[in-house]
Image 1 (tube, protein in one colour):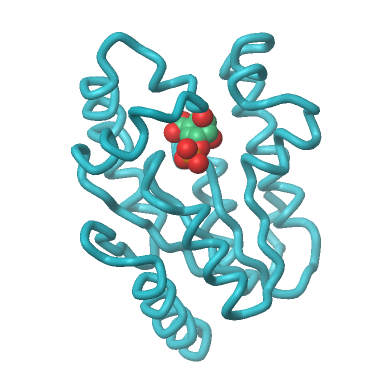
Image 2 (cartoon, protein in one colour):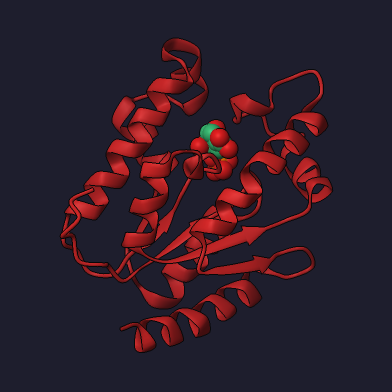
Length: 183
Ligand code: S3P
């Protein structure tokens, strides 16, 4: 990241696979009218293939490099406010964590491991969960990533039991406060 980059005023959604980032992102986009950048979607469009295929053909490291390249691009481009929905592993890199914080108000959508398992078990578009034992994989990844989400986020929202509209309303309120009071 260029250290002189001015902090931006986007709303950035982070959190584990299946926590609802894309759905809440669409709801915020509808309410605010800001453009929505769904990073996984942009990466798939540019690569001309699904994330599953990118992992299979080129490996996870190539996908991670694409994520970082896109984050840098979003940081470098002076743009009006956007809603940015990220992939669950984005916080694994320290470079990414710094870029995320510079992009704006970072909201961590949190869900319990059992809810994540329930939501993801029938959908086979997440290569990291295509294992014999997705429950253990979720547990291990969550343990590793929780402190990284924690360190990156300005706000943590527990999503269990809340609908998309309630989450969006909370994020709107808190982000207004954040941007109005930021030095
Ligand atoms: C990943 C999460 C996925 C996608 C890729 C890797 C991860 O995005 O970026 O499969 O490492 O947690 P979602 O969080 O939108 O499922």
